[in-house]
Image 1 (cartoon, rainbow, N blue to C red):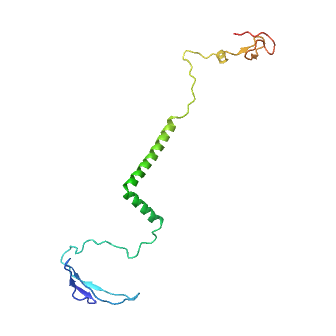
Image 2 (image 1 turned 180 degrees about the vertical axis):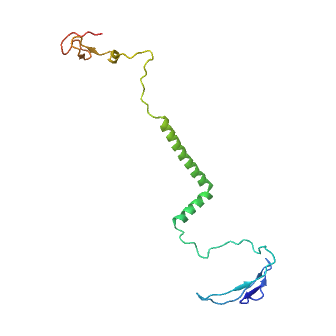
Image 3 (image 1 turned 120 degrees about the horizontal axis):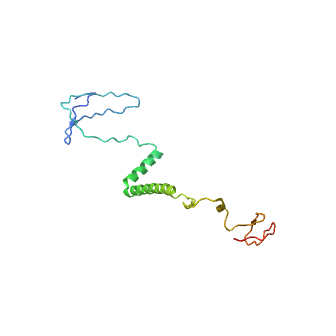
Length: 160
């Protein structure tokens, strides 16, 4: 491997067998450009290091925002099986209540009773007059219940 500036021969690590190069470059001020050139020849396509995790350089900002709080709540719900089960059962109960309410309102409408007539009974205008009503045979005025004489002409009422 060739480096510019020269990093020396390098040290082989006994744990992983890789060669590590180190150099003391000193303090670098802000705005100064540091050029480091590396050139090497690799004999195969295999990776020499396993997958490494990435860590944030600075802490994540806005940890009090709604997305962060929502993420924490969702994560705690998913991790806590009892809470997850409770929420699922609560949502199922609400859905069942809505379905039952809709179905019961459809089938429990108040219906007015329909007066049924007998099929062999014919409609007669005389039947429309109530049977308890009494009319004066002389003048035709309707008498009140309990009257024995007509209140208009004085004729004796015929009780049927």
